[in-house]
Image (cartoon, rainbow, N blue to C red; front, top):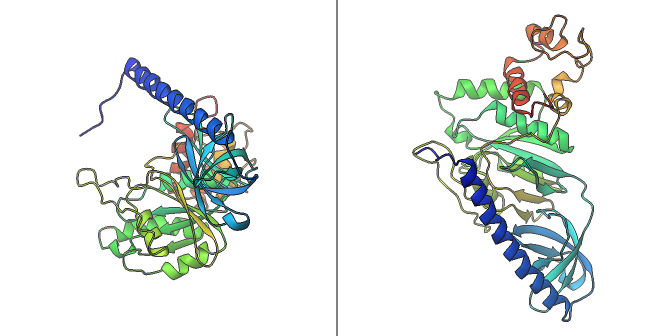
Length: 343
């Protein structure tokens, strides 16, 4: 069944109700913080945000006798929005709780616009973004390319990961091979694994060791199964594909950080079917297509749109086979989705 479209008044009313609920929650949280700070809190120390739950976060202690222990913490007022992967300064309470008093600077952050177009961090201090896709639901180059643009924009190294390789058959093999060949030619690191059968998982572990990685991708591509295969005992819930749409159903509801026994960390993020890039400019999009790097600035016209203009270096490269039609189509689709002021 298609989603019912909300009119402007209904959307306004929903936002108003959500805003009122958030305000009430913030007020309760403020009282809880006041009560804790009025009691006997421990000294300030550093911690790592491993999950976020509304107005509270779950942190792992990083210092002294509290290192490795998990605490549910309240947030002091006027703190910026915290996300999984953030390092913070906090003070422990005496009931397995605490208060976060400051956020430490981020080395990197992965962001995307929310439903209202406002920029929302997804994860912080990430070294590697693992872009997960599968034979089913059918992978789309445009979504993969959006992640690659976002990774380039954030300065985070990408790893392409085809999961459910055991589902490759005669019907989807040709299209998958064509898709993967494009990224292999661009020398993006690319792995094929099967979380269900265990194929390729040891090779994946080697790419994850020593890094802070985040899994992203459509719902239903098997991110939760990958986490279960990489970290036995975690038991992340696994969802089936919708029989009606063939798309994945959400099983992860909040980004959570896991530790690997041999070092390295993994952030499993909620599945998203679309990845908006409303926060980036045209120049950022072009920078995200690595095969464009040596071509930009070589067009006859300085304001070339790379559409039909004579003397366009990108169009010539497309004709010569140095730029693939699949990638040019993605580039144009992404540009068309940007706010008109940036396009």
